[in-house]
Length: 379
Ligand SMILES: [Zn+2]
Ligand SMILES: [Zn+2]
Image (cartoon, rainbow, N blue to C red; front, side):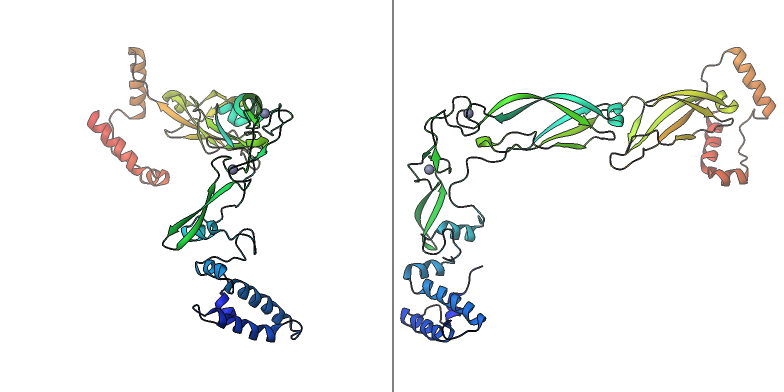
């Protein structure tokens, strides 16, 4: 946001010093607060004066011509104009903070992964874990200095934290600034570092934590433990610890979102005659009624027997897929009974007759036809 000082004074960019002075005097006579009481004019008077202060000083004018704005550069007007900002503006490094950087800064966030089984994910649990982290150095309370000693102003940068150098470039002579190698930009050094932390203000250690895992977590869920991350350099405030959940697959129940699915094998006879089975769910035993005449592909739904919703209330459902099992080995007596049954039902030969209503009602015409065809070709 560089103000166009030439436009403010109404002079060309190559105006001679005399022209600039004349233009300023003329404007100042019009706009001076003693003469003109209009608040807008007073504001303009300040701007025009600022423009004159820059353009009447050959050094500042040159800086300004290179694209810098002495009023908005670090240090303000009157301080040494810093070309680091100008270079940043040209080369996209903008926004870099000037001056020494603080020794104390916030610690990093940490991420750990935690395996939980389905029951833990469903009902929540609490886990005691050990984490490698950094904690405040008790010996120096984060200062990094040995007892009774103080940091010293860096001799190389005189406490500025940066080293400036003049370089020639296509822009002319420019000044660049880089972090002081002696103090790494802190502006001070620690001549007598704390022996416990070597001047870092924090020490690495292993700490024990108890993590509460809420009901409903899933793979990818992150639990944020505020302030349980590493203590920052110089004893700075700690970051956060994130625990990322990895839910192990369950041998029986497959999780899809908050719903659970499982399969139960139902013998052909039980499907035909009806039966009940006991299913061991994560909530305990559930009695399932297999209705008389249960068809292949049937699914029983147990409402709210799935995973609790992590956000909000309620639970997903448990879907029990019924796999009808046809016997593969029949002893003589069983075979005889089945043959007799087939005879009684008139099912000795596979027929292609499909009842029109039945087919359209169940929508299974093609699957029935396919079964009939395969039955004919293989049987
Ligand atoms: Zn220490
Ligand atoms: Zn230094």
